[in-house]
Image (cartoon, rainbow, N blue to C red; front, side, top):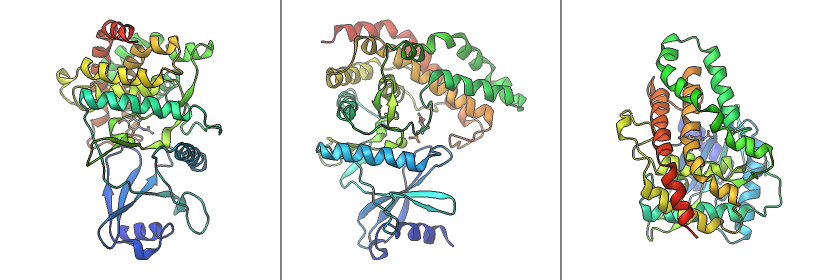
Length: 356
Ligand code: GN1
Ligand code: MG
């Protein structure tokens, strides 16, 4: 069966085949594969996605979360994704040939962005803060769709394991400098888990993948339409949403920049995002959370260094690598960002203290 025929068959489990014209690849996520369904008239109507079940091993648990989250948001009148059930089973996914697929409505007039201006990052800061606020009273208990996803201790444990098991001496040799840099600050970088254990840092429902391209904007007005990519919505420290956004948006170069002299931490983006985020999280953010936001801005590039390097030493099984050294290049760029974020911690603290 051709790929196209297969995509067509899967889509027709959710919607009548007469409504399906073309199905085309879409997006640049590193985990799931995404397609856009176009009607015979040429309108984009749905988004078809193959769930990476090696990453999300509990598909039912994942779709339970997404169903709960989208229903909760919709009840509050907040625009969100809408997933369609398989017409024969009523489930929000289809399982076929060991693969898992889902279909959602295409959001018209929408566009995603990969770069932000200070102005748009202020809006995005408010938006992700509001997202946490809107989900604070969700009645369901949400699953950890990826256990220990943003747990720094556990990520370091995985790196240790990949390092111990790695038989590729060239990769090990190449990673040595980064590994030394990571090791030197392990203790301080696991602050979140320590605060969590002592009861000082709560878990909240977070998005956990707050990249700019996980927000849809209106093509016409430029306004925020909705938050997408809900797979990792789960209980986490607020550090996740705050820190991961800045990792992506406050970086002056792409996350896989080969020339690390181009990688810096942009304080203008930091300020704009932070003031938006603090404004919309005011009702619940505790002093400990607020005080440690600069730490979170250093934690995420550090964590991503650890994750990319662990995957590199493990043979590139997790992150889609476009060339053999891609995960190494990514790790090196993230570590450069981490170091520059560390150099700005005092300035970050000063700015946060100046905010109401
Ligand atoms: C993955 O698939 P994508 O690009 O939205 C990853 C994030 C990483 C990111 C790095 C489930 O997100 O945690 O920060 O790549 N998602 C998962 O680009 O591991
Ligand atoms: Mg994504």
